[in-house]
Image 1: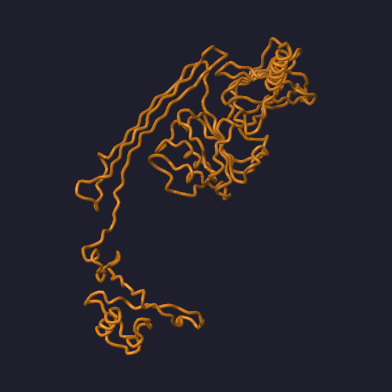
Image 2 (image 1 turned 45 degrees about the vertical axis):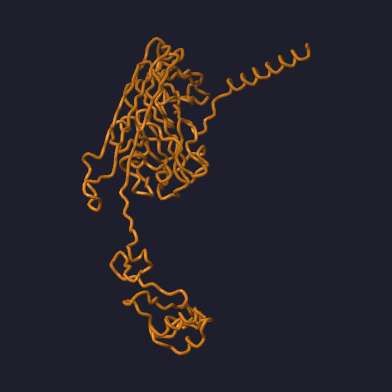
Length: 418
C-alpha cells in the first residue's frame, strides 16, 4: 500500500514538472497571428544606449509587453496582439520617451526607434506623429485587409475570403465562385498568387492551419463580424511558411477588450421577385428561401485581466432547380426509332449491329482496319442500302444472292424458321 502511494505521488510530481516546463517555455512563433515591435535606442549623439526598458501597452486591454535594449541598443518586443499601442521608454539621466497611437497589423514587424534626450526622468518627450508604414524589416510582398474594409465592403453571400481577391496579384481559378449564397470551399481554394500553382497555398486561422490536407481546401470560413483583419502574403514568404510554394493568408479573429462591443445581422431573400423560367410550365418558378442571421458579443469579465468574445452565425438555404429532360414517344416505346431526331432536328440514323463488317480506311493510306454497319430497315420509310450485308451463318445462299431489301427480309425469316 505504501509503495502504491509513493508511485502515485511520483506520477503527480512528474506531471506537475512537465506542466511547469510547458508554461515556462517561450511561445513558438510559427505562423503567429501576432505582431512585433523592434527598434534601436540611441542618445542625442546617435550612440546606442543599452539596458533601456521599452514597454508597449495595448490600449484596448491595458496589457503591457516589455523589452530590453541590448549592447547594440536594439530591442525586440514579440507576441503582440493586433491593435493600437503606446510605446514608452526611460532611463536614469534621460527624459522619458513616449510614442502614442502605434498601430500593428497581423504578422507585421514594425520598427519604432527610441531617441533619448538628456534630462530628468520625470520629463517626457511625446511623439504623436504617425510613423512610416514602409516595411523595412522583411522582404515579403502582400497586403493587409483591415477591419474597416472587412466590415464596410459589400460581400454577396458574406464569404470573408472573397476579400482576398482585392489584393494585387491574386487570381481566382473559377469565376463562378463569386456571388450570392454559399461558396464552394474546394473551388474557391483554387487561387493563384502572382501566377503561382493553384494547390500550393495556405490558410491560417489565429495561427493554426486552416486547411484540409486531403482536398487542399479551406477548412473553416469564419463569420465576417468575427474577423479582426487578415494578411495576404503573395510573394517572398518568410521561412515560417516553408510548406508552400504559392501564397499564404493569415486571419485573426476579434478578441474581448475593456469595452463591450457586438453586432447583430439578418439577411433574407426569396423567389417572390424572381423571373419565371420561360421554358417551364406557366407560373412555375424555382423555389428559393435564403435566411442568414447571427450576432457577436465581446467584453471584459474582469477589467484589465480576463475578456471574452463569442459569435453565432446560421444559414437556412432552400432552393430548387427546374430540369429539362426528354421522354420517349409512343413510337419509340414500340421500338420504332425511324423518326428520332437530335436537338438540332437532324434525323438520327439507327444502324443494324448484325451488319458490322471490316473495311479498309479510305481517309488515309494506312492499312488499319475500319468497321462499317448498314442502317436498319425499321419501317417503310427507312430502307437499307442495296449493298450486300456480311455473311450470316444461318443462310449462306441469301448473303451471296444480293437480293432486294424485301427479298432479303423474307429469306432471313425463312432461315430463322428452319
